Image 1 (cartoon, rainbow, N blue to C red):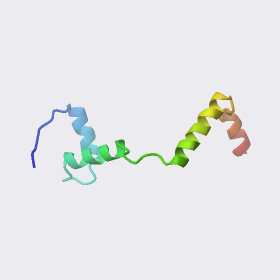
Image 2 (image 1 turned 90 degrees about the vertical axis):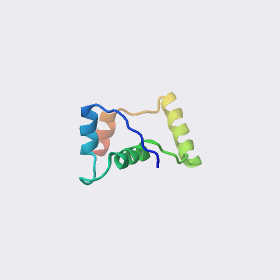
Image 3 (image 1 turned 30 degrees about the horizontal axis):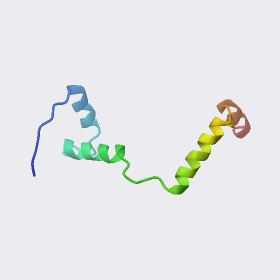
Image 4 (image 1 turned 90 degrees about the horizontal axis):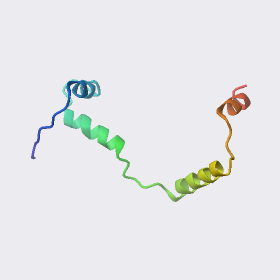
Length: 76
């Protein structure tokens, strides 16, 4: 396995340290976990795409409700 060195600032190193699940977890493992969270490789389903398109149409048509109105109606 080829290994390389990267430079990070002390505050980034401290943040990575804070994300370790256990004391001896490597920074490499922490970074892999972060990349897995950040990079969603699964495509959206057709149903999800249709739902997004419908929501965008609703927004464009002005079919939106202020948060306060929803809160009054549902959080009585």
